[in-house]
Amino acid sequence: MTTIAGFVADLAARTPAPGGGAAAAITAALGAASGAMAARYTTGPKWPAVTARAEALAAALDAAAADFQVLAERDAASYAQVQAVRKSGGDVAAAEAAALAVPVAVLARSADAASLLVDFLPVCNPNLASDVRVGVHLLAGAGRAAWRTVQVNRPDAEVIAAARAELDRLDRAERKLDGP
Image (cartoon, rainbow, N blue to C red; front, top):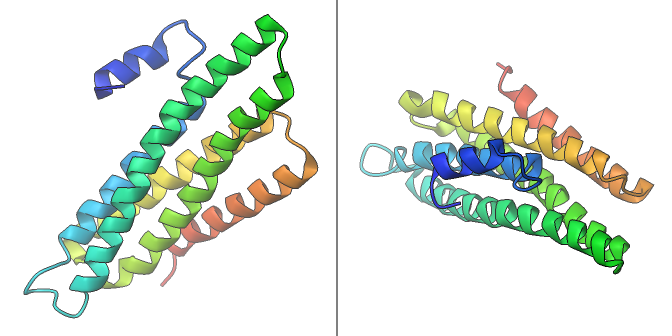
């Protein structure tokens, strides 16, 4: 996935990977990047009271965006591994567990990043508030897509409960955008 156009073409192709899990992760990366950009525009002499916070947020969101890109790659690779193991008769349960870990991580990391952005919104450069909101909405959409990928992988009740808790946290973060 070296270019956006290449990723979109790969996603659209009649191949099993990349698929929806990778798309969710890339969407989350875009959400984190949008928030990081807004944070960077809330630094410097015009923003002395929040510059350190904004710089820390930008760094955290850069790390999240990088993690999401790795998760997108891992999603495609882990799904390909599930298919290979199914064909070879290997340990399908282990391969499926590894594949399931990816959307679970995307969901949790999306909730983390969205919560950070919502908390930052009140002090953000008002000219970039829409970019923070876009970031939150992209992260929420990515998290919901990851939730569906979790569900389709038929996890046990414990994984469902943990993923549901992350989804609820993500929903709460997004609802805060409609607050006062």
